[in-house]
Image (cartoon, rainbow, N blue to C red; front, side, top):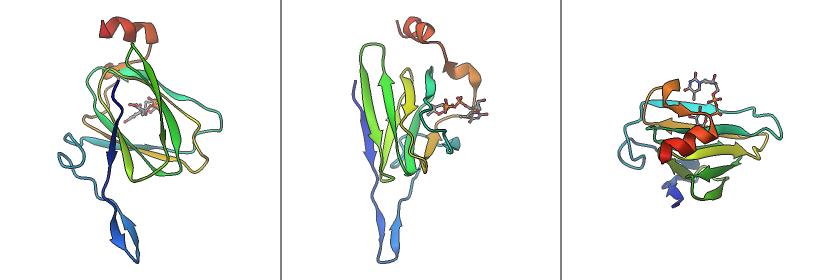
Length: 131
Ligand code: T46
């Protein structure tokens, strides 16, 4: 499984830094939704699902967390601790997020509106689905 980390160009200068995100430019899809995850309790693991069609880019705009990715054949762990990197998550990848720093704000850009029917929340169902 390829880990697709997008490295964003950091603009700005003496006054500080700035990153600009643009659909179909440095974000490789139409952005239909943006949400962010914060105040995750210490020790909590989130995610435990895959998406049938959704594409997402995950960016820790503050703090950091780790993400376990599983395509049904292999598992990989990614550390997201820089707001200059975005993790591209294509469909049919089981994900679990963990080790959130107390200040972590994980922003997610998504290719579609929220739709619970796009979620596979049971691991055995995920394995069956990708066969
Ligand atoms: C993902 C990872 C990285 C909504 O009402 N609208 C939304 O846009 C989202 C994303 C969630 N919700 C509701 C559904 C649940 O009642 O918010 C509640 C928490 O969602 P969930 O348990 O799915 O959160 P996470 O942190 O496990 O997963 C989220 C995304 O749902 C998921 O698409 O890839 O972040």
